[in-house]
Amino acid sequence: MQVVSTIAELRTAVAGARRRGSSIHFVPTMGALHEGHLSLMRAARDKGDFLAVSIFVNPLQFGPAEDFDTYPRDLRGDLVKAEAGGADLVFAPAVSEMYPRGEMQTRIDVGRLGEVLEGAFRPGHFAGVATVCAKLFNLVAADRVYLGRKDAQQVAVLQQMVRDLEMAVEIVPCPTVREPDGLAMSSRNQRLDPEGRRAAPAIYRALQAAEAAAATGPVSAEEVARAARRVLAEQPAVRLQYLEVVDPDTFEPVESVSQPALVVVAAHAGPVRLIDNVIVGTV
Ligand code: AMP
Image (cartoon, rainbow, N blue to C red; front, side, top):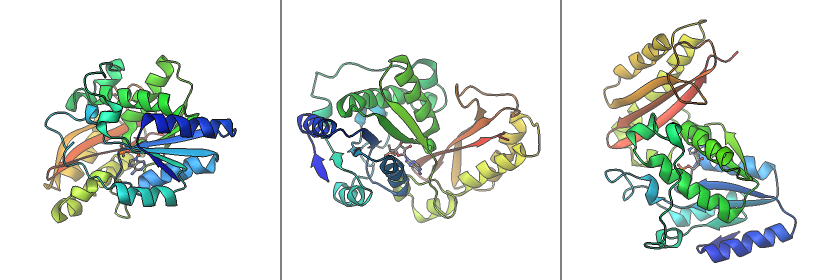
């Protein structure tokens, strides 16, 4: 496995793989790798050829009051995991390599999809995500990019960007990987204190309650949301930020779950902000 930190080295490595006739598969991450990231790498590996992984905590996607400084970082541990996960190349640039001071002015605005839900609570977040991903997709020139459904709105935002800009890359959404108690794996879980860690699985239990309510037949979105909120209300250590039943493509609220709908949730456990989602109303 090759590890590079400059754009020039990355381009050379990718060009070499192309010359050898490999297709390029790409898993972008912010590091502190866990089983969720590794599942994306395995999905990419199954398709064979050349697997590139990026590790970059992207300052553009963090608000001023958010956790950029305290976001977990462990490059050494990540390299061991990436190698075990079958990566051929890890790109781990410094912030100054991705955004040379004063030179990086462009932002990608994906419109309404970037402004609702996560975008409403984290203004500028999706412009930061779309911008860094556009840059990474250009650099890696990947045929396929593997993204986790844990960040469902991020998948939708990046699919919209790829469609709108006719980028020659296929996005492959992959299932959410969970801890045995249901908590969606996240780098941020490392920062949960013992009480927060004990309480956090209530988020997934709430989503399961939503699934159960939706499975009873045609039902209003409000009833589904109420079933989920009831579970969270029993767990005061988890502070709900939003829980909505939305259209899986537009992320706009739906009235009923006669069609498949996404139940999306964001909540705090102590200082740690967690998100999760499930799809409901499928046959
Ligand atoms: P991050 O490092 O958190 O920015 O995540 C990098 C990629 O891994 C994104 O596509 C995430 O959606 C994905 N990912 C993070 N957590 C999980 C998980 N628990 N299951 C599946 N994919 C995940």
